[in-house]
Length: 617
Image 1 (cartoon, rainbow, N blue to C red):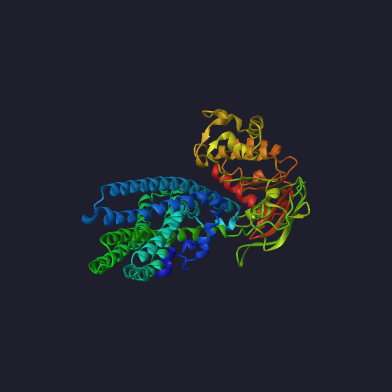
Image 2 (cartoon, rainbow, N blue to C red; image 1 turned 90 degrees about the horizontal axis):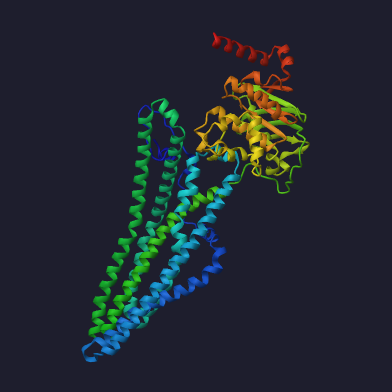
């Protein structure tokens, strides 16, 4: 397997004789140099809080820095003027100790208040960023989700944003404190003794030269970690969603083995990035050790020569300890910043993603519609060069029921997707009451279209809330009336808490037929002018289907409707039946007209009757 292929599969080698299962192309390592634009972009999320942050931060930074810089000076002064045998002064020593204690108390209080305050602000910034990302994802088109596993999207909103918390809560302020402290220490060292201070500073360029070589490796290492975590989450999400299929085909061992491979790859990736990250600490310690050697070798010579006192030498040693401490933190912060950059690149990659279906700049609200629809010479491709619809011309009068019939892949659902503007056609127009749907707002369009799908999605919450999803301001009476109209009321009342029964994710406690009845109630409550039934009765037993047929008469009355069904008995009363084949309209007419033609529709009916008769026998 090539390196590029390994990158595409997360470094997991497929087992011998096994088909390679997962290839995620959206999570390749981003080969770009460190981008300060990313830092500035993250900083814009802190801008709204700058006015309330700056006064507090400045005051606490000044207090912390002054007290830290003052304490070594107190120690140096005490040694030279209160501790040396020739100048013993207990009263002065007590005063200096009291001043040092006061400085420590001020430093502690200022630090604690600053950490508490910046943590609150940092969490607000994280909230804003997560809100913006989630809101943007909600607006993205179907094409975005077609090519990305759910786990890959999930990890951006959770793990990647979580990795920015330390940066926003403490990192930014710590940079300011450490930089001010470093500048203050350098100035004091050079003032105490310029030659000794300059000698110690020689080690700083050496440290930066060596650390610069680690930067790219660390950045790419953390990008790789985020990529592996994204793929691990994607596989985990897919495994949970498909657990029934896994157990049905007894593939648990294979699934566990594959997860172990991905989990191990993730562990090794983390170890590599962490090892590189931790290399900053020893590098700083080594540089600090060299600095101390210079200090005591050269400093002792200066003391013996009378150029500096013992107190100044001890003060130098104390300041050097404080000097490497912020440099070490800055090194750790830089590593933290690299982790944040790896995550921010992935976050902004999604935020920068533009919907393929976007509202026009001058888009207007679609007025209340009658339901007259025209597909004007529609050509559509999911993939370039592979048309799913070819020259579709279809006129639908308001109030008509249109049945779309054809083999799998003939283009039935694609027509529905274009009507709801989940995708835009490559050529042609979709008109509703003479309005090109690309010229109206998406909300005003989709709010007047109701959809009942075969795979009904039930949200976590109560039965009542799931029905009310079609109309959020509906009263309890309206919810129950809609349920009664589609014959869902009886089974709902048989549940432990009736309409207030809590259902889990995807409604696992309900049968497929019950979930579809709820979706019918949801659609009826929304009261759309255009209604789409996409295999809406496919998983309902014959007895329930008879009830649904009665409910559908109420549901479809006075609305323009599109019905997709493989059970052709459910669409025989449609005003117009459109027969599709390989993206083209082959036949149109009502049931009797198409049966008389003895074409494709006639063949489908005969084949289904034959199948049902054989099944009955």
